Length: 166
Image (tube, rainbow, N blue to C red; front, side, top):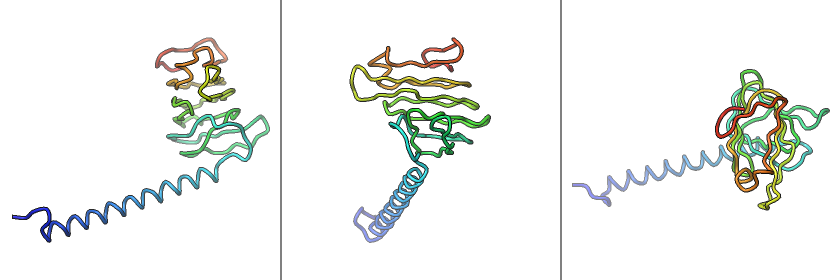
């Protein structure tokens, strides 16, 4: 009967460890490459980071100001306060906000993170303006700790609360 420290078991364990370390090294290389890509696609000028692109499908772009040059977003890219995000008709994105919230950008949506202050104070703010289309949001800690500082403005008065699309 073979025990844990028999020759055959030791070889299998060594092989398993080599494979494990190789996979870990490949994974770290992929993360480094993704970080490099995000750094290359970072905006030239900008304000405070509002969110990070967590998932992406299709063409979603961010533009700083009216005269800014659009940049195509990729997974891991930062989204800054003041940038206008535009999702193509067949595109969607999921953003992870800096206050641990989530925003699902629906196809054809255009929105702007107008104000975002997340310093851990009672005066923190989260102000988003939906220009067109739909978003789905799960509020982060700003929405829980400062309800008056968490605002979503729309061109119409239709808004859903607690997990509905708006």
